[in-house]
Length: 464
Image (cartoon, rainbow, N blue to C red):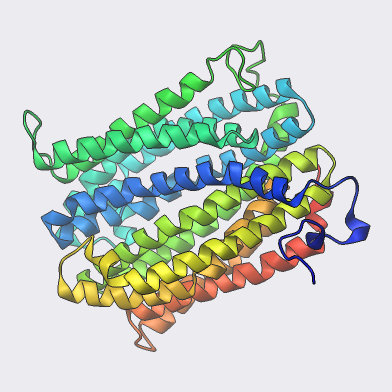
């Protein structure tokens, strides 16, 4: 009988290049990187969820005002996210090649680019907040509050961007605990000042929605300072104390751009698709949109586990590609898929059994709770496809195969999901349920094509 958890069962004999690690060591190596990444992503997701929860006592309009800013904010951060995909992939390659100077040079160039891009995008978001939110589907009943919230958030963008870039480089080295701790501190700061500034506790002013945004700024500043401090250690693999150049030349920029260019296209397609999707749902009415935002917050928190596995897969695939061991890249990719199935099963049960309670945490309106609880059943049905496709996409990004991921995102996220959402919500008349059926179809489509791509092995021939 074949042991399904065995390393040998993950790879064909003709794909072997060298000696394989023990099965136990393989899972331990993967889990060692994955669990801090999962916790980090969970904490990042908690920032918007905490703001949503904290302002929920102010009414449905406050939930909508905070929630409507999510997709516009992520669109503005698209260039940063794509840059960081390249930073992680290239640093992982240099780590596998034992090129410490190359890894540090990549980090420095990443910091320069991240600072420039984040200031530029923050300025765009501040100046054009109202038209951006109008495109996102914001209603006049809460537009003024949404504009205030978004404009304040723009002051957090440069700190968030630099923190994410530093953490992306550290993840490429497999050091995921650093970003985990920065986000733990960031969330503690954010939650503390949410409580103090939204409600006006003690000497602090009662700023409501504005207070939630200011708390996010303070949390972002704390995270940046902590991540920056990790680069000031003399013995760190990545360190600003190392005598490495800051010059942006083609030897370091070209490999970053090779990955980040396609990742940027992917991010643009994804964010436009998500924005169109959210805009369509926002027009279903305040109650439906509030229920949708609550369920998306819950789904995004569960997504963190898949994202943690994806980050681990990306780092390990990239490092072993740099070490010229694509066979180990295959093994770590499949290890991530198997762990993804186990995690998804637990999330599925949590969503099914705890759906009403989970929704009621964010809102006490019986109509919204009932609608959200039904939507959570659909969310549960899509968890296995969502987590698995996220891990496979991480494997492909780690190998530098971002062109394929970008094309898949264009077709599925930017075209299939919004078009199917509109068709199911309005002509068919499924309302909010139609939007979540479209989301499941999108996840299954991306899973199918990512699985075929990974199995083909074409990604293993990419050089950086």
